[in-house]
Amino acid sequence: MICEGPVKRAKLAVLKLRGGMAADVAICCRDVFGLSTHWIDGRSYVCPGEECPACVQCWPARFAGFLAVRVVGPGSRSPYLLELSSSAFDRLVGLMKMEGYESFEGLQLHLSRMKAKSPLRAEPLGASADLAGRIIDDMAVWSAISVLYSLPYPAPGECVGDWESRSSSAARRLIELAMVRASR
Image (cartoon, rainbow, N blue to C red):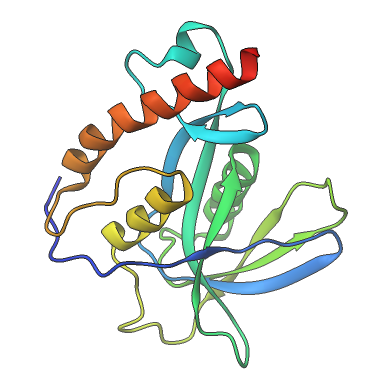
């Protein structure tokens, strides 16, 4: 991985759509940020990969993908994290391929959720208006994800690979503690 420059502390709230809601967003990152998670005792935990105690005990893992987005329209310019499930992400990628889009960066999406328990739908709308200078760097997104999952914050100048190695022991420990709480 290429090391990036100093990281500004990113505070990205998770964009949540309740049932019956819709929003148009513009993707302001270059890639999807995916990780495997385990649902333990009512909370999601990052799977540390090798020697994961939840995997050893056959707890199911699921994909969680994140995109940095900005809500399109007047009044809302703050970036958010948009979480996509595996099925929502696969559907989005399929629609992007069908419509000829090759990149997430700058793509506008229409998001909707029919009912409270319905899956999130993300449909491409086309290229966004000028996002020049408003693309969020990878480490800023990873830093927001680290806060969301209670992982160590990436150090300034740290490579993504180094941060992942450093945070995997913390993720493993969080899962161990959650499994102990769940077994009580």
